[in-house]
Image (cartoon, rainbow, N blue to C red):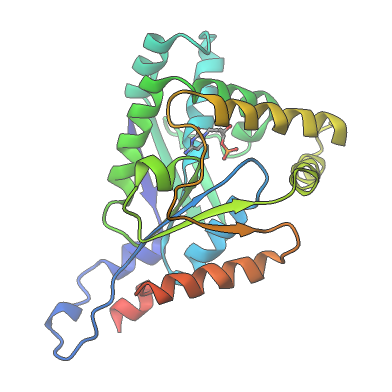
Length: 258
Ligand code: DC
């Protein structure tokens, strides 16, 4: 598998700023910020906003599982055929491209940004994500994409497995009712005919699979900061995380350039 992450903020800042030659420079660093949590806790909104505020790269690892699941569905593969899925993962190219406030996802060159958000793909992604060989391929690519820092990566196992040494780990939670309502609203905005009760069942099923799988289950890393977004405004949560990042010496990309 090859994953390419394109983000204008980091691409421009990494192009030879020359800051390493400046004397008396306070040492600042570009952090790895890991954001994990269950379905509907607000990870994507938070990760995108923090990346924007810090000028960091945003990586949605769920989109990688979703893109691969879509390819498996299109090929008619069984979603528990470990060897077939591993071979599929090795032969797959995923581009994650930042565009304005959103992230576009390309699967082997095709724009699948909308296609990977269907209910069918959500369930399929959570099924292939239990296969250790699939996780191994994707985790390797996620490490490659984020190891230089200056990245906000969201998923289920970022702080626990992908980057256990991340400088800042956030475990985002929210009440099941609020998570269900958020997901249901998203479905409604897309015009999906799905009711709230069905959405709650769907997220409960995915939560259970994420928590109970033997390979990299969803859990809160001991050194993660738990943030409950139930009664918080998304902007408030983002500002809190940026403040924590600054406390840990995190510099934004623009600060590294000046
Ligand atoms: O975050 P999401 O809903 O887009 O993720 C889709 C599925 O992918 C989710 O059900 C679990 C899986 N996933 C995972 O196992 N590990 C990750 N780091 C990200 C997602």
